[in-house]
Image (tube, rainbow, N blue to C red; front, side, top):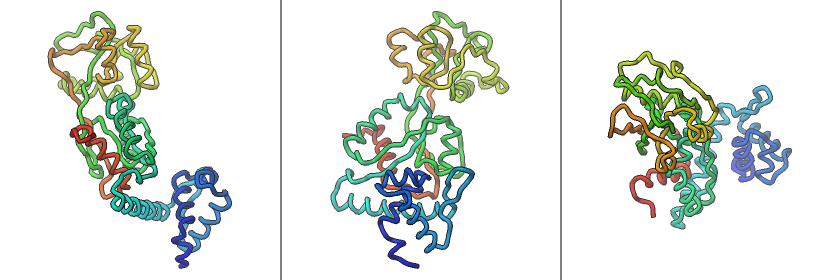
Length: 308
């Protein structure tokens, strides 16, 4: 094997950009190279390694199994260099690269998301945060498929290949601008309330059912009267303000409207809060880049009062 090709920085850079974008043209633009240059680097690598690093799947380009292994090697090499530079210079500003994480839409409105943006600008501005909003089920899938470094999980979904790190709690509420919503002692919501339906609300309903209606195991979210259906959380807010219907929602998302009296919280049990645990999840036995560890530790420090 020709080690001068294998360890040539420009070749490693070309491969890493190609593996991140899965598009030689985009990789070339990001790396200040030509598309033919990227192709030549990949051809040399594959010739010397005697393996296929990329496979065409229809019109898409994907990493082969060997390509995934080689990408992990490159990431570890870059992380070792970053870690060394960090130790020598005693600064975190040299950490760079992409950190991918996924979370439900409601997390975008949580205080920790804004705090993270401030911490990133202050302490590690060269790290790019790539955030994807997704349901808890998709968050789990993305972690298992290695499409994200870590994720926020708002549902108690256990999987043997996942690490669960306790993060914080959020309060789940049933809100509406209606003056009165009749809730009988059994909490017969399906017959008394019209709801706004949005992605992820079914998960919140399950949390509610476990707490207030544990005996109604056969009651499904589909059994409820859904007056409106929207495709994202943010479309719920104007409908709530207009008094169109009710919704299950994390309280922090509508705290301002509750405080100003626009919305009212309804609960079958007075003075009792419905708290939902949130975890940060990662893949077991999987190498996490130093930059991803830094972001996770920064999130955790927010709730341990360790930030400056």
